[in-house]
Amino acid sequence: MLPRKAILNVKPYQPGKPIEEVKRELGLQDVIKMASNENPLGPSPKAVAAIRKYLGNINRYPEGGCFYLRQAVAKRLKIKPEQLIFGNGSDELIELTLKAFVNEGDDVVVASPTFLMYEVASTAHGAKIKVVPMRYFKYDLKAMKDAINKNTKAVFIANPDNPNGTYVARHELEDFLKGLPGETIVFLDEAYFEFVEEQDYPNGLDYLGKNNIIVTRTFSKVYGLAGLRVGYGVSSPEIIKYMEAVRDPFNVNSLGQIGAIAALKDKEFLSKSKKAARDGKKFLYSELKAMGVRYVPSVTNFILIELGPESCEVTEKLLKKGVIVRNMKAWGLENFIRVTVGKESENKRFIRELKEVFNDYSLAS
Image (cartoon, rainbow, N blue to C red; front, side, top):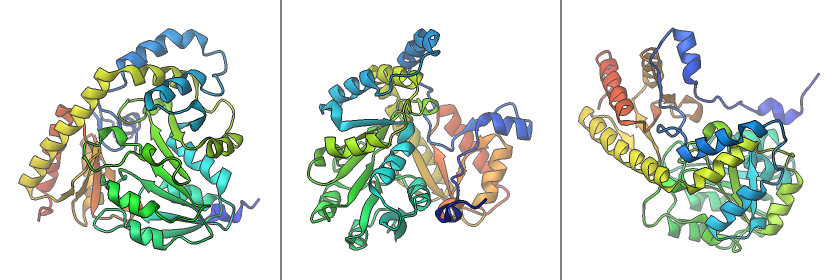
């Protein structure tokens, strides 16, 4: 049996190792995970309470159109309910965009390095990928715009970006959007939207209606619901209609919907999560500077850290010490690791274990 030709070119995405797997493989009891940009504070307490109350109903299929979640998000964002689509995390929204708008052989523009699923999913759909290198760990929107032609059906922009932690400023985005072809979809991935505090960071929702823009956000990050997989996209009713046509039924589970509605109301947890990321970055920046280790300043809840040619081996040594971080080889960043900002105790443990590993290497420069 032979698969579709496009599948032969796909390099599967490898997620970060879960804590349970590392404990089992290495026989460890105390393991912390700082690899997948999850919320170290756990889920929203209000979400947990709502989910517990609903558990007796999970014998029923979920509400197929996410009606109540749709109403809650529409009210919060001050948009029309028909401008929303919900997915099994933001990843499914990438797939729905490709299914709805990109034919085999169409051009798709992505940056490098960025979130790997843009290229993975586009390749699987048989699109022609145009990869535009980043400059100084930031999107080169001018070069990406130059790569667009009449055959370009989609451009993927993560703002802020993963794994770099950088962002596209308002004036950069506005210059990029001017004069784009009418058939080109701009997929604006704002998974880390809530963490950004910079004044010149653009809210993608402000540009709806001016171009074919799809803005996506998630409950996986700041709201702490990564295990429930709830993401949403915002666009024009027409674009959403086409995406809904290719959406699988019951794609967002009941507990995810219930938890997301409750988490949306948990302003105290949101504030605590943002503060934890802010304070944690300050601590990690200070410690890394003192060690002479370079990093990319981040507006998210993770930091890209340069450790040199031994970074993959450092990742393995940290793993054996019970600290899970992400090596960046899959992104073409062989000298880097990505570290999620954890709780205070986790941040301190990461630095302590990194210093111990440094006793074996001369990595600091």
